[in-house]
Length: 434
Image 1 (cartoon, rainbow, N blue to C red):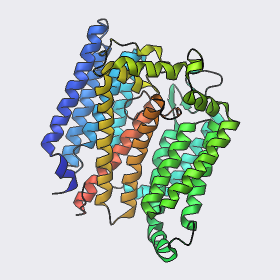
Image 2: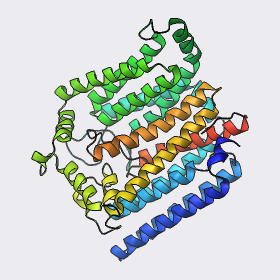
Image 3: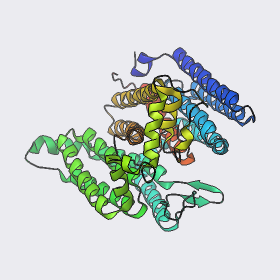
Image 4: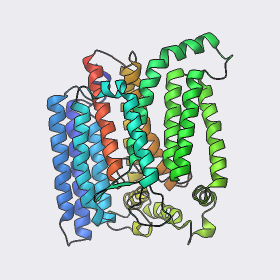
């Protein structure tokens, strides 16, 4: 039995969707009881249900061999996020529902279009150049929807629509590095086998690592985007380690992170602020550390079972529907909700890495599956750890759950590519183990 079929059958796929539907319905019903006026939440539920139905129908019809877990998992998390946004910031819920429609459509295109993987591999330099131009345009023409004078300008505006090029850059960089390292993997392994431990780093490894480090520094310096810079570099290190199997890559990368972090702490006020309130937020609990202190109080108020949807007070946390939505879930869903979110991302990690194992003979496909999975999971861990004060705040979104159209779109495209990779592993006869 293949790894895709071994954990859950297609029948369980429908059970997962049914569970997701009941959960989203229960959340919307709770909002209706807590806030009787208005029917926009039921419209959001209808849009979510339509996306779930159409996505399932098309995948079962056109790509029946794809992983049966990934889409139910993604649509469940997005539904949970839609409920939370409807509860926390109703004016943003309609936009999130519209972005969900666009995102599921993009996922289906990525999963069903047969040539997309080949194009990402063959035209990697063209795609990378386009993404870098968008990033440069953000540095020059970027804006911030909040309108705050000193807020980071990470968005480009086209008409009334804002989008964040750094989100698309995540996808492009993973595809680029998977293609590059896939071509170089045989030479990298041969160099390591010939040189053993005598060389500190192969030029084929040191060059890309330093290049990615410099790109991360550019993002940090010009955009003050600590989270994206850190995310890029960490995922890239994991891809390098997957390719080479050399633990020295992780040690060298950690040293570069420490150097960059120390320099950023002394050079940039935003980095210094985040580190200071991470180390000790309590002296400024009513000032600069207000957000993280309110987040910790939300976790404490949630207890084991939570206060219930619509019954907590997560609105005291600034920007709770975006960066701090995990704290809102912890307050109203309790420890069980926290465990539920962690379990979803754990399953996503298991499924994504198992897809990579099925492509053991094809380096690009293997590295792409690992890179996409790590991009989603590392991002989730970074923001969850930041909200819990286990790490300094990074400002990234919680995949599928936080408000943000660009983030939701790119996350679903990543799921679409993983679905395509899972189907191609089956169709070409590759086998692996969970």
